[in-house]
Amino acid sequence: MNPQDLKQIMSSGLLSFPLTDFDANGDFNAKGYAARLEWLAPYGAKALFAAGGTGEFFSLTGSEYAEVIKTAVQTCRGKVPIIAGAGGPTRFAIECAQEAERQGAHGILLLPHYLTEASQEGLINHVEQVCKSVKFGVIVYNRSVSKFTPESLAILAERCPNLIGFKDGVGDIERMSAIFMKMGDRFSYLGGLPTAEVYAAAYKALGTPVYSSAVFNFIPKTAMQFYEAVRTDDMATQHHLLREFFHPLLNIRNRKQGYAVSMIKAGARIVGHDAGPVRAPLSELAPHECDELAALIAKLGPQ
Image (cartoon, rainbow, N blue to C red):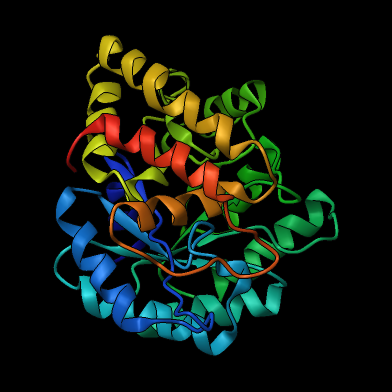
């Protein structure tokens, strides 16, 4: 798949980040991960992001990363495209990107670099090095310490033909509008805020109709139903699900840092697709919080 093919895929539809399965000892569980992908693939997501944020990329070793991407590509071949997460320090991000390309992934989502803040010049250099290390498509994730100006993106677009996507996890509407006005259709634009459904209608109005759904990991039918409501401007369905499910879900998610991932693993466990524990430094939901989540899921009916 060439970069423009990936860009076309990113232009419509729902995306999702499968959880990464760990066993009781916290080791990667390839069999469980393959079964998860086989369960999710038929529901209709346009692409799946292996080893992304919800997939705990930040906790994987280099060898585990290779196994995760290999398992995802082999399991989903001919069913749904696989985009690999990549990130961290520039040289490690390059190693991840090249490994993903070797394993047959269709592109990468370039996650934030590391703790230290960086100048726009430094961010440009980082992204450019990663893009030039591979031939397939790259989507840059605007989040945390990796926040790009429209001017920086214009420079990168000129230098890096395979940089085809921009995913926003910040929620700065003014900045997002400025980027879209400057870059137009040079990029595919993805909504990437935690629990992206809450922001989906607003982002669609900004020219960003595509988003990634974490809840697809445990309520895939409802996740697709909500996306279709956004696509067709069915505000009645959107408001019903926002009121009855998504906003109550935020009440759980916002109680602790890291619950945006822990909550998704708890949800998968509740619906019978246990992905094992989260890795430190994340913490598990408390038992009463799992009960609250289970009650919300039950209201949605069979998936």
